[in-house]
Image 1 (spheres, rainbow, N blue to C red):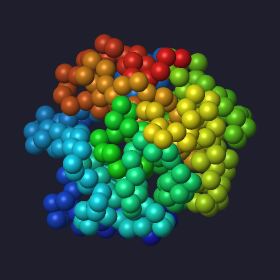
Image 2 (image 1 turned 60 degrees about the vertical axis):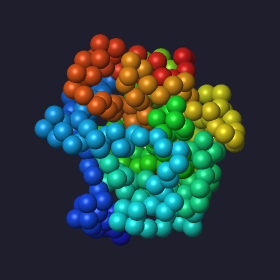
Image 3 (image 1 turned 30 degrees about the vertical axis):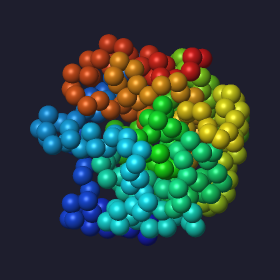
Length: 287
């Protein structure tokens, strides 16, 4: 990500916080290790009771309300190409959480396009981070308007490397691998090195089509079946979904990068009792 875009994000964060448009959700976190894979479970801080109301607002699904037509100007970073805008997440759990929103309405179940991937790559080309997508309500999406998402690399955040470090590191670009410890249908693809946003976006698009075919999804289906995809500068994964939650624990794409979120601290015990891998398997397609 260019310094200019990073500065725009930080200026917008400051402006939105001063205006009261940004309503971060304060969390505490605890680690859980499962089959040699490190997970982080975030939970809403008991010291910030008002954040419980923010969580409810963040996940509320109102078919008559579209927060992206238009997006709040206090939260809007600006253009990301001709077809997308960068918009801050109003209720961030992770700092600098960015939404990449189509300017015109498209459904969250619509196929992802070349333009979508190039907009995401515009953010990721220089500074990496993690891009992800919740393909429909059953995959964890709370808004119907198409939006990809991005979070920066930071200690304790979701990272594909929690899983990919156990994959063959000499896997050629474009080749498919599966993780032996993951009991849900998935695939990982290695991405080629790319020097600019357009080539990175096109590489992501090609990898996505190939990954969808590998897990039995038609990448051009309208509407798409529920799925999550996650991408770093090096790897991409696609996971078909069957439902949004298990034992009242909601799971979105970040769960498949090792980051789970619960509303109450007692739900940490639920996650621990089920086990993160079994929890994820319960909302995905069996392998």
